[in-house]
Image 1: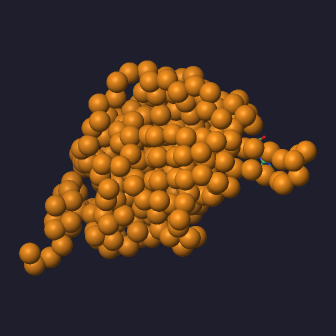
Image 2 (image 1 turned 120 degrees about the vertical axis):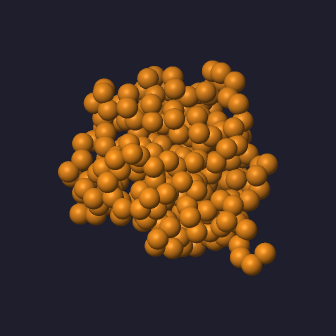
Length: 281
Ligand SMILES: Nc1ncnc2c1ncn2[C@@H]1O[C@H](COP(=O)(O)OP(=O)(O)O)[C@@H](O)[C@H]1O
Ligand SMILES: [Mg+2]
């Protein structure tokens, strides 16, 4: 072959696809994860206290629990934003427990798409540029970056807002852009932290429908939430208390879809380029 098979077949540059190997490993495999604050036995806090958890490809999992139960700690560790005090964590087959900070940053960029309560879009930067940014970090070339970002914006229904700044968009639209940003890099895992916490009820339903569609397309989603409305969309609900998993219930049989996310172009999508699906390299 004269050039990279990875690029021809999937549109994903080798730099990205190389960290997405291990197709048969679960997305998340955690064993006895603990996060302990302080070393005085009288005041020590076990924010995570021996969590073991497997999440397979294509699952849609909600993590619930009262304030202080360890949800954020769990999210930060699963998202490679923090490291556990002890225990083992494998993400998509990679033993991230053994990675140094630089490797963790690379793995985070390439394996995880984040959706935050407060959207976390970069101000004074267009929707399109916001979606392109993680692709730039992942080493995707400019032309493909633009195509994939436009396709992701079209997929979430805001292609016509590509040139708008975050403050020119409604909360629901901003969260759609954030979901597009999370999707564009084709991550192994979408990690959402209270994704509807700042939205009104209409936008909440919108964004939940969108996450459902993302899940139906075969993506793995873990959503941290205290809202029943959000958890009801999941196929599995995990409840935490005092840093432990106290309940883990499957609501329905989630078929292990392994299709790739296939971006589509929107009809009146306005900004530039024709074919985006599959990326034409
Ligand atoms: N940096 C920290 N130092 C000390 N205790 C912490 C720290 N971060 C979290 N905790 C404690 O760990 C426990 C779990 O916190 P957290 O994961 O934020 O819970 P949740 O997100 O479910 O509200 C709480 O008791 C909290 O006070
Ligand atoms: Mg929290």
